Image 1 (cartoon, rainbow, N blue to C red):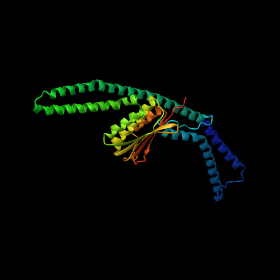
Image 2 (image 1 turned 30 degrees about the vertical axis):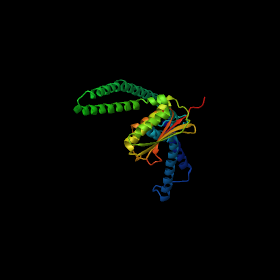
Image 3 (image 1 turned 120 degrees about the vertical axis):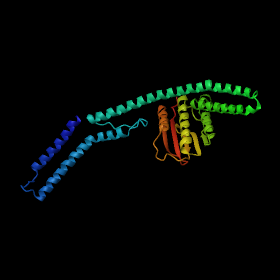
Length: 315
């Protein structure tokens, strides 16, 4: 039954019930309404309103739940659905909304996968160009400066050596940028070595990184390992930029049927701040592989990032 006619039917039944009750009840109303008669009328009116309200609330409760879900739904936290019950207009609306959420989550996941794949390909291309063009150019410059320093007069040698050191520092920075864009160690040596190199890189910036890696972890596959590496990289970058931490603990362990990456720092914590693009990007990556990302207060007093990657069933 359409919602409009259901509301009309409920109100009609309530008014009919009130009319029948007044018709057969031994109640009369004088020309001048007495106090007792006024009390009976007020009680009757309250009863009719309460009955009508209860019946309408039962019929319209799914709409209230639907409105609350529409106001709070987040596609980065998929799986939220309304219970589907009834075959009327409200039930059809709830089922349609649940189906729409499913389609949106599917399309968002597909588009995010394509965007992240394109991002990784672009990072790979830029890293390759930095290595092959800028890196080789700076290397050739260093060799030329080395040869030049042996032929210049003594009074100009210090200037040439200073230029040489600047070029060497620039070359090191270019190589570092290329490594961050394309984790070649992940492809060549695996996830443990890549995370260890990442921890060493951030330790060189003045941040003490404690590593705790469980031995004998199962293979996650290239796609999952890349997501774990990128989440660890983004979490450590956030620690270095925003947390004012001195110590961070980077761990990779197996817990039951999942592998858990944890990054805990002793910094100033979240302090009620909203999630930025970095955390939202980590959530997007986690959704691609069916993992769960949790950001909360950590055991060291700062922020804790947990990535739980479920293991594939054994074949």
